[in-house]
Amino acid sequence: MSALIRIQDLTKQFPMGGRRFTALDGISLEFERGEFSGLVGPSGSGKTTLLNIIGALDNPTRGSAIVLDRDTKTLRHREAARLRNHNLGFIFQTFNLLSVYTVFENVEFPLLLLKMEKSGRRKAVMDALEWVGLTDKVDMRPARLSGGECQRVAVARAMVKNPKIVLADEPTANLDAENSHNILKMMIGLNREFRTTFIFATHDEKVIGYLKRIISLNDGQVVRDEEP
Amino acid sequence: MLTLRLAWRNITGAGLRTWLNVGVLSFIYVLVIWHQGILLGMQRHAVNAMISDEISGGQFWCRGYDPFDPLTIEDSHQNIPTDLLSLIDEETATPILVRPGTIYPKNRMQSILIKGIDPDQRILDIPSSDLQDIPHRLPVMVGKTMARKNGLTQGEEFVIRWRDADGTFDAIEGHIVSIMDTIVPAIDQGQIWVPLADLQELSGMAKQATLVVVDQQVRGLPAAKNWVFKDQANLLRDVNDMVNSKRGGAVFMYIILMFLAMLAIFDTQVLAIFRRRREIGTMMALGMPRIRVIGLFTLEGILLGILAIGVAAVYGIPALYYTAQKGLPISDDTSDWGFAVASRLFPAYSAALITGTVAIVMITITIVSFLPSRRIAKLNPTDALKGKLT
Ligand SMILES: Nc1ncnc2c1ncn2[C@@H]1O[C@H](COP(=O)(O)OP(=O)(O)OP(=O)(O)O)[C@@H](O)[C@H]1O
Ligand SMILES: [Mg+2]
Image (cartoon, helix red, strand yellow):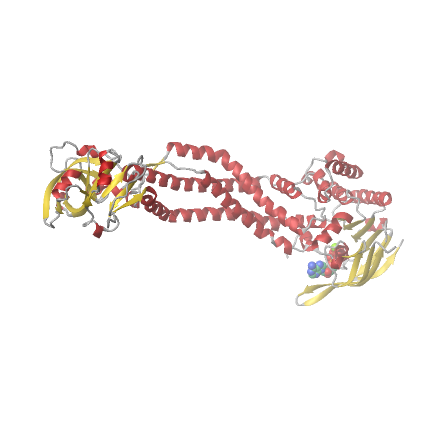
């Protein structure tokens, strides 16, 4: 059986003032089901870029990223959206909750896109909020939550549809140490329970401490790939 | 369905911004409908006045007569055909003789039309009976605008000159016995009214007329040789044309209002797409197809328009109803508008006017909501997530 994610000789260039800037330079990587791995490296090393390509939000310039047996480069907009909707969860540094929706509605959003029926939706949302310990805040708007609570909502939103892969870009950058540890422990728990594959992009030591696989990037190249 | 739900959530969640927009849009609905209603009311009023004071069920014109071409007036007089005479005997038609002439009020000369009408007629709702049993020779009735413009007053006398059938000039003293309160310019301005029999006698045109007004009740009109029948629709066409020409200003107003509506929506949309790009990126990352995001934003605009209909109804219906009942005073001098304008105007709001306005505004809103939303299609989700616009 092939890997969950297979990245082959992937290069990403951005146009930059007439010339081209190479953000990712011939990267090859594989990720298996249930991995708890992270892309680490200095700012500008290409972590976010790689995560976006895996998430079918961006296309490689050369090479390919095959996610769940689908080459993201060949996907049309709608197919890419479908892939994300069904199988990928995103967690962002800035939480990116939808501000006019309540906590419940934010977590419900991906399920609405999946056209899940109402009672199933309600149960899944409440389960996810239970996981992140926010069942008492279901009707609040994000503006009234703390940063840590917001990120927990975002984790619930990423997890509620039970995706195969969760992509988390600097999920702890806006959190204090205590909240960071809480979030990470929660993710470890989810990873164990559902065998969800987690891929982080981070330079936060706290996160790195939890990782079971550390992929170091520098200048768009993989310089180390180790399991501590 | 989902898109609709989300759109609804988004606009209700946006609070003040939504209500500001809805307020502006509702105001535009009400203003446009009100404004168009005034025009429609004006037109209806003009038409009604014309029917009651001037044209009734239609007019037979003797051949060659054209009220808009003064050169035809001289020769426009013929014996009234027997078929029409029988209608006149039944009091379901009344003849009018039109002759060119000159009056000299306050020693100023003015070319006018002299119109002879049967003082006993009851076809037209004008006070021709004032010309009855008057010892003066010649009793004259003028319209109020004619009176005002020329400073003519009740009891005033002036010389009237005309040419009789032989082409000889003749003159007589006219005596104003009645000032007719009408808003129809065609029976008011540039003309005086005298008893038909007197005019026929003075001009040597006994039993002749220029036109015969037929009552609205008459069914099955006779065909009168050498006379042309002009039905109501035909005679009203001019007033409708004229009212439409007055719409120039109205169209301008209309365009400004629609522009405001467009601006309100367009602005919101452009701003929304700019401010909410991170939200757009998030929705895309969560697996919402672009086309759906575009649909969502477009729908939000449309919903604003629909909400505005509701809000407009809440204060617009009472306001419009009130003005339709009470009317609006018109102080300006409208006598040179060329069609009948009442001193108090009652706006008329037809169902067609209201649905038409709502439809046009809604179509505008839809287009204007959609156009900026199209930008989303070009938006790169990774840039949107960073809060950048591509
Ligand atoms: N859309 C873009 N256009 C041009 N250059 C870009 C674009 N996106 C990323 N880059 C460049 O690619 C390089 C890698 O960017 P990336 O965001 O992947 O780095 P990163 O490892 O996530 O850094 P950080 O830790 O600061 O988030 C950077 O030098 C960045 O300037
Ligand atoms: Mg980054």
